[in-house]
Image 1 (cartoon, helix red, strand yellow):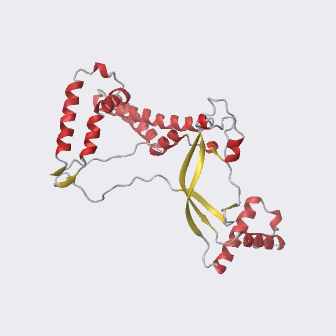
Image 2 (tube, rainbow, N blue to C red):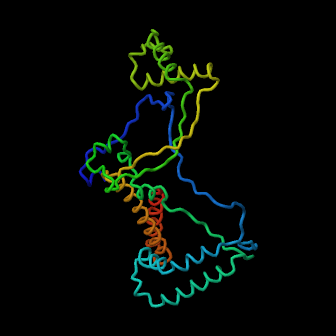
Length: 296
């Protein structure tokens, strides 16, 4: 993606070696709580045992009201066909409505269920694409104040909540500074021949962290505190969509590989010679491996 847009080196965010929380504690690691798919009911289900269903009639009525919209989407967007060319559209539509009306009129049922596996396809890429999430798009008030488009009518800011999770040392900022000062006064650091000031920034940060853990273990009887905080950030909708486009192409490329996997899998059964069968099997294996590698 960088090559196609003549970008020599895309911007990459590098975290500082020593990072602190808002309260001044040394941060060891931080991440976010990702999306979760929740289920209303859990258990073991089988298609050969009757189960009691209690459904909502208004839900089926909503499906009936929007049946044309949903069928049009399935035909034109997902199927890539023109709805006007479907000869039995009205018959299929009437059949669907009839089944929905039967479910609506008798919502309480005792029947053998159909067991389906429902998956959220490409959940994270679609969240990124829908909200244009990318590192450079997370802005603060100072960045927006300097922007020419910072007007309400442009609708270019999206406020989003997310859950931050961090592990930090219980020692305070003052105790961190005293530990660092103590290491700077020592002639040798942890048995090393080098003084603290002679170490690289990365080695200095690790040395302070190790010494602070030892101090916290004695003073606080623990070396780590885990905390989850709900935060709100602003996402700029006008930011260059370099990273967003990269995610979109990565997601779409997987769809292409999945289609090619099915195409070559069908050719295995249609192969007339051992060479054609071997080529189809190898190609199906390659494309299946590629689509798994692009799974995200």
